[in-house]
Every structure is written in C-alpha cells, then in structure tokens.
Image: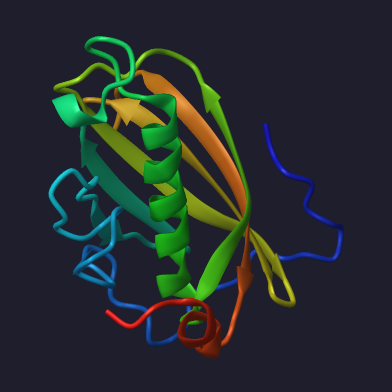
Length: 166
C-alpha cells in the first residue's frame, strides 16, 4: 500500500536543526487532539529517530473505542495523521495532510499500546510522502495498521489565516 511517488522525488536528509535521535518531542500545541494533553485526546508520545524517522506511542483508552473493546478506526487514522505529520521536525517546515491512506490488518484492543514507526519516503518541492507501521504492545509486536500519506509544506500564514486564535 502506498501513494504514488514520482520518479523525480528523493528521500531527503534531516535538516541540520532537527533534534537529536532519542529526543522526545513536546506537544507542538497544548490544545492538539493528537499530541496535546486534551481530555479525550490521543496524547501521542513522539521520539525523534534517525534517518528521517520517528517513533510514537498511543495508549488506547475506553473513550477511543468504536466496537466494544476495540479502537475506532477513525481514531487510529487520526493517530497516524499526527505521527506522520510530526515527521515535519526533520524538514523544519510546517505541513498539512493532503492525503492519508490506512490499512487495518488486525483489531487494536482497548488497553493496548500502539507503537507507530514512521518515516519520510520522498520529497519533491512542497510535497512530502511518508509511511508508517503500527504494532501492538511493543516495537516488534504484530502489525496492526499501516499508513501512507502525502503532506504539503505551507507557510505559517496558512494557520493564522485559516485557524482561530487560541
């Protein structure tokens, strides 16, 4: 499963100002549903990896369920959207989701921890292609979910023009 990456796109190196591998990132915005501390949010914990990668963890709670005892698929997609978006730390430019695909391989139970490993696959101009794998309960656990995404870099004015003051 992947989005089509054009032949001219290349896998970039990390920006020189990228935090060192092993650095746990603070929330980019305290009010973020994905990485912030909102009640009912995802509260992802994200760590910078090497070679344009990141690792994130998502502790699945009761309020994340769809079917009884199983995480809602939309919540899992939101976790990947956040984890893939955090890869922007490697190119140091704000970006937004243009396309996101998820493939659900097995149920993600309430009470489990989803370990997300994400990477930048290629970049061409403003377009950044990313992918990730979600494993149950450990970095080497069974694959539960896979995702691919296309992000587009935007100027900071994108958020001040289209967002609301907080």
